[in-house]
Length: 341
Length: 261
Image 1: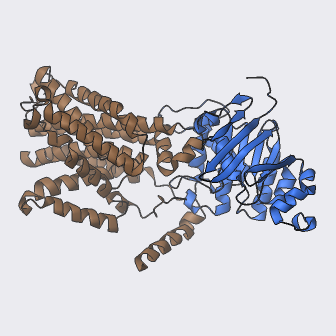
Image 2: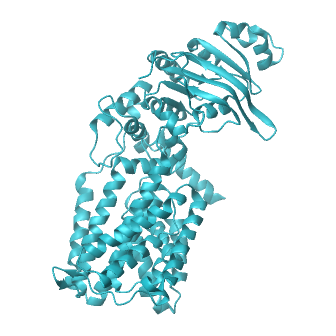
Image 3: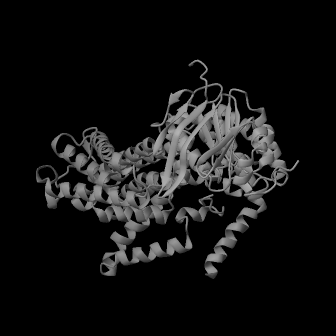
């Protein structure tokens, strides 16, 4: 009880704060954002020059799941649609990119574009039903859609390789050369990831993105001022599916194998966890969240005798209690504005 | 454009029940173009339900709604809004993570500025015309100096003012206001009255209000709703003089006690 009242106190205190109460909040100068962004990009680009191939490969995986988390954040954080089936579009893109690489060509950017297109098409085909629901129903519907697609991947042997997965995916090729080195593959994934991240970021800042945030805050009010909100949510769903499909094609290029696990419930839940841990709505926070989640599960997990999931659960509980806005909340001391009015 | 229609907004036989309660019971209403039409009635008279039926938020069990002579009964709230119907809600219902200016800009982008039409194409560039129009609307409702404040930092009365700015940003031909002055200070409420009185004559206003001073200052037509039915529609003077209205409000109170001044 005391904790609850303390929180209420905090909220009221924030509202009476002269910093937010009397004048406009001070705008951060441009360099405060630009310098760290440039530094992060430079460090990320330079990493393979200093790290061992195994560490580089792990980082490549983190980037792949980071991009998947960014695409999910477009739904969860920006639009307010928590999906438990987002891995379906990731997996669809991965299978499509893998299949194209085996049977047609592995030349960049063909598998990437095919993966993105298939992810987007799968989202377009299934999203129309999902976006008509909200809250826990949306969660359940996306979960069901994800399970159906996972079942398809499991049983459509001829195309997906069934339970064994789609194996024997050749290395991505650029200008006739195979990207077999871990460093080159990393740069490819990083380049695509940065491009896709920028695209999602621009989308979230556009008038379309502003409308999505309006829908997240108050969908009935958006309808009352003339926004066909279902159409907007559908647009966000398809865009998120497309980016997830692109991330899937990167997974196929990195893993050289796609299994039904990659589009199953576990992946979907882990990525939703990554978005929450990282801070929904910030877009970059979920990348950090994905890194934490994948590291804990894949790198730390084996050392803990397979108890990685347990550690994840503890991390999740801690984040929810200590950092309601996720890792992204650490950078701003601004009071939470995500309150209903 | 279509020729001026005889009515801006009308409904006939509009009904809606919740279980055994007939919240709105065969209501017929005609709002003339350019009218300042007030809807009054005791608590539970069905005013807010009638508003929801008119705006399309709620479907009627029976009856029709006409907007500018066109049957819009089957139209969604979004479509009615595109046809010029705009509303404010009784309990300010806004966007918790947006500032006042961003809130108004949402509606401005959808409905266009004086210079250009609606644009939904994603484009990250700042749109000076949108900002200018949003600023102008905030200025009209008296929120110019609060433009960059997040909505949760606004006082209750200010949120109601923002509701009005948001409704005006939709460039309405018919404006429905659900208790626009509720919770406002006398100064804010006087400003609201001036703003509504200043609206162009083409804009039709239908409003629910409990502050009867405001009703009789602004309205040229008054409809009294009681227990889901229309008790009386008439001029403010006719309503003031009506015994039935007095009984509905206060049982058997004396007229002088109800309408002082």
